[in-house]
Length: 161
Length: 139
Image 1 (cartoon, each protein chain N blue to C red):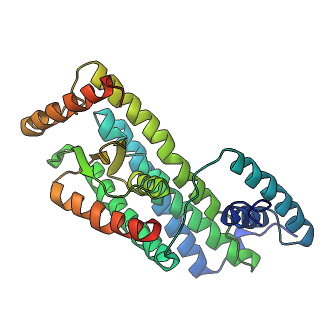
Image 2 (cartoon, chains in turn red, yellow):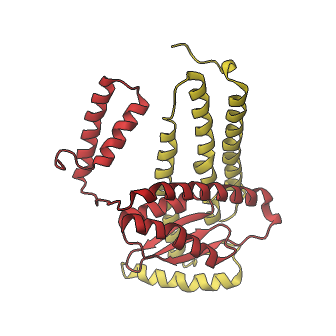
Image 3 (tube, chains in turn purple, orange):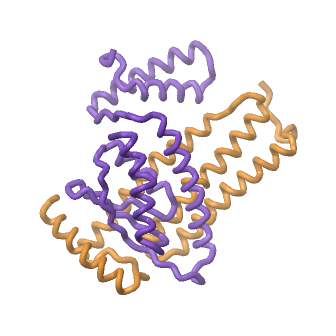
């Protein structure tokens, strides 16, 4: 089964994407499956790590938390930019020690942090498990540390580890 | 299938579409403005993320509502734009950020934004040199 259908989740996502971009019909479904199979086998040839999602029910929660946080930081960063230099702002680097080691979990964490306006993933030291962030409005370092560790990393560790 | 016409859009949908468009376009504009106004590279990196997050999101929502209402069927493929922008953006950003950090470390400029207060500058100098020596050790 896994020889012919490696990465079933990717396969299904690609078929759904094909159908969304064309139109729902049997012909498109067949072509979509063929294209997805080729893509999945090409992907398998790269020998990527196999992510294992252990707690599926937490995935919608993570998506919800992230979308809400991105919305809030959009408002925060837009306000800061519009206020210009009238407002005292301190931006700076922040090193956060992570317990998360799963490569997929780390990749998702980097996407979350980078997508959120106001925080940017700069560097990751895999030997020490430390990530270097740049924070646009670094008022309270402990607060940011708490957000990253308890809000995102905790959920990601539950999902992947 | 005839081309859907904007005049056929009910008022509630028109208001919703317009609101999402203004929010999305507005956030993107503010992001671009910040990109132009902010001083240091590390600050400027944050501004365009407005456009790539809810800036894109607002316009994508507007498009989904517009075509779903007009064509009387769910049109959701725009969501793919949001997904692809979100997933690919960190790659570009990290490439730029790491290049900037590498340059600053190579220039012994302890990768500090110009407007940093002195205390953070000191802290940054210590962590900066530490990471610099680790870089030399090839880790």
